[in-house]
Image 1: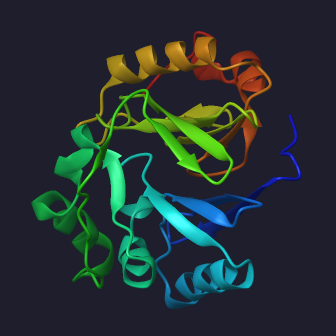
Image 2 (image 1 turned 90 degrees about the vertical axis):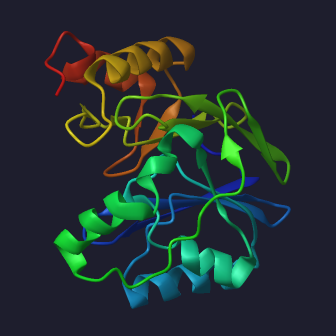
Length: 225
């Protein structure tokens, strides 16, 4: 299902983990930013330039989950637009604190940015309005306990974070991951979302629910990890 003329999606592939930062906007100029992972100076500036050139007004800063590669740019959006990140409360232990610092020291030494903390949390079934559109929050634990998908039924698109990729699924061998939970989450979403729903994962290329049901080995009796 193609995006309507009224909706616009911009993807930035950023940081050393090739994370996908998505900006979704419509004709009103309101926008939501999903998984702002911009890390290097140049990619941070490119994101700001895009928002300025398109005359967009970000109204929500959303996280599919709180792993470090998905939130590097949260301080940038707070500084320029006054927005704090929104995440499912079950992922709060992954933000800030000892775990975040320990992970980043492995890659960067001292972490170079501040880590804004959320004031409001996402829950399963929440509706997030922006412009003339809305996103539905679907809780999909497994890759992390607070992983969520953002689903726009109007446009037939879903932002699946690291729960579901093209021909792959999210790892569960990270802290707080759960093999059983991701299996249950995947079973739920492939039954809930129509086959023509276009998915935009947190890494890699887009796909559709129908294609993944047919071709993804993890959804066809393959081995989860």
